[in-house]
Length: 290
Length: 325
Image (cartoon, rainbow over all chains, first blue to last red; front, top):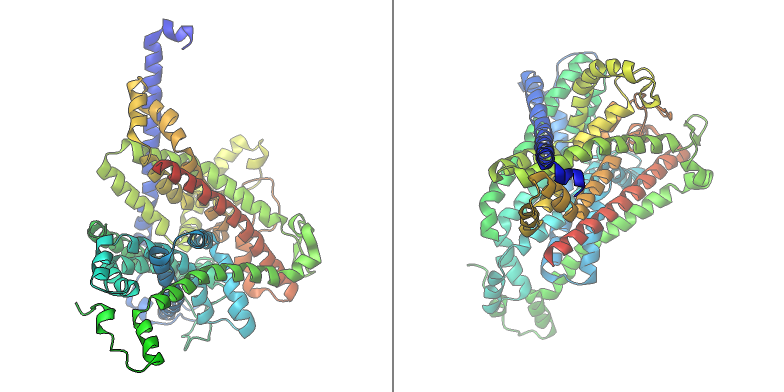
């Protein structure tokens, strides 16, 4: 304490108290700002997107350039197909890998898997797109739903592993011991007791994971590419909602901008809906798992 | 329960080796371990193949330009000259801006949520902020183009009139700029900084706070001089994670940065970023060299984000260890 402070204690106290009040208020303002952004985004998309949303959006193909109207039915189906491929790529590997880490793992190899998983999770999505491009599009010489789905599927693996590991670990040890005391092998106990007990969490994890990759645009730009028509089968370029939003947003047409808002609203409603629902399920089931 | 123990309902061994094999199969532990082990191994393999593919497919560009690829400023697909510096510059500048805006806001909000807000308010606001992390980046970009750019076009020019003697604020402002991209990125990294920092701050033991308060410190002094230093590694980890996120972010940046491969000294000028140039040009890249150069850019981006991410994980891990001991 300097002499001046000691000589003049009330002023010092007032200074410290006002710094306290100012800084605490500032942190509150930071919070309001951060939370306000989401409210703003939601509100804006709702006002702009929901207003021009109509039945055509879900049932019609895009119209040729220059004509107004039309919809994004092909993009909605395309997104669904991409997510289906992604699920088949990402969920089995992620889920089984999670089972290994939670039930059989331990030691250096598990640490390595966890670390690499975290690194893979941090790989920019555009780089995943390049990867899917080099392993599928380049040899096949054409864009396809498969390539896009592969890119999204690989992006799902890290989260799938970590979430299944976590939910399996939350199953009480007593359940494992009980079933093994009845004579079940370890794998039988896992399959018939542990996994069913963790089912709600595991499914929620997959839903959250799907919601996350459903909005990914960058890895699809040069894998699934885009398509203004239906995309039969799995071997052709396919439209998807996020890429449609991007293409329409940077186009010079007002009608397309309007449709980009609608598509953004639909995508955001889906993504946030799944997120909110999952959190409610987890909040209800969570304590029981622990 | 239909799932009774396998050791009991296994058929009696009657057929010699085949039956013995069948029995082992029903017990299944080895198989289960093998299958799940292979899946775990797949993650490592996928990552290895990813690195290998990026390295191999960029060979043509690496051989053609060598290290000068990273410091050359010419990006000319027509003449086949490729230099990455304008993109590296853009990525660094936009990321730095995002951190300058995002760190104080994020850490401030995390402090409020962890230290001051009543539990119910804190958890509901954190929920809102975590939902913000789930908003797809293309939607942030959409709002960037149609909402933020018009607003910035109102705000920036008057401010520029006062500050145009500073080089980084000089020049005409078209709306799309490095600055706009930085602001958009700041919004996108906020939820990462806030949610991780909040958890780290919440995990600081209460006796630390009580000790400081008992010595007569104010609430803010306790937070700033005791709690935050205690949690600093974890907060740093959250910042590194956000940094990696910002550098790899593609769509929102592509939509607002202006996509102009120049090194502009003004923040108000359009620029470009590594991720954005890949997004824009990859699908139309004709010729092996062009494609190779773009893949090499991907390799650069991959390398940098992996380094930053690896550091972040170690930081967060070391805080977690300190917390449990």
